[in-house]
Image: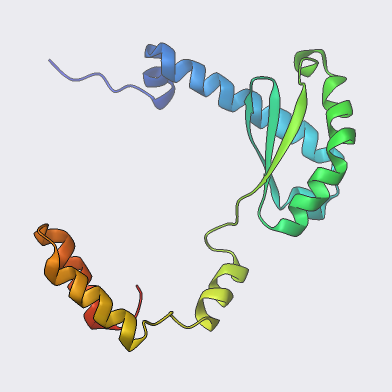
Length: 152
């Protein structure tokens, strides 16, 4: 018998949990599109509607500056969202800052800052402690740390 090829949507529709997850993702995407049309494009491009939990809208920004702008606009955003009957039950807005992993700011910071290092005294104390332990894995890890003189 030849296997039946199912589309991605068919697979999602076969599972109630996946179907409800897809529906929630679609609702969030729709609200995000409507909501971010109301925001300044320079702000909207740095924000994401990440979730609605317990009637709280959770919006993330990729920098603290844009997170501050979101918090400042939260009352206006909440008022706008509540105008739509589908979203009238939203109680509040929570803003979070979650930097993008490929943000130019994070790579610059990482390349400028040196790795912290252990003083000779700290390395000796860690080495001595490692020799007294009965847990071989922990002892080995501490000896490695004490020998490297650089905190990974």
